[in-house]
Length: 104
View 1 (cartoon, rainbow, N blue to C red):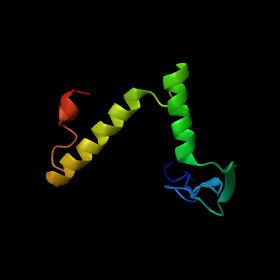
View 2 (view 1 turned 90 degrees about the vertical axis):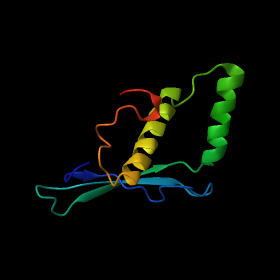
View 3 (view 1 turned 120 degrees about the vertical axis):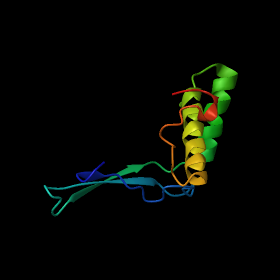
View 4 (view 1 turned 180 degrees about the horizontal axis):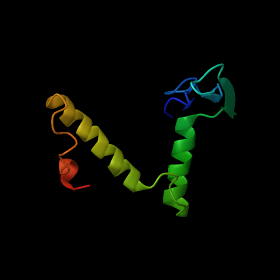
């Protein structure tokens, strides 16, 4: 969020299913002086069980998926570009619009 705000997560990956998820929203003055931090807490849940339940509902009941399939394709393109950038030491990654088989 630039120099004005940040949103770190307490545990960003593989949050234990018996602990709540916390996001810390920090913002302050100009330049950030004595920033205020707000903690947003989400209820305890097993993220894998929630994902499986929503996926099953999409297949069995026809409900929409919480994340559209196009997001998965876009994420894959980003990952492929990161690998390409690493292979070329960052040269030309921005200009190569054909990675993943499609232009952007």
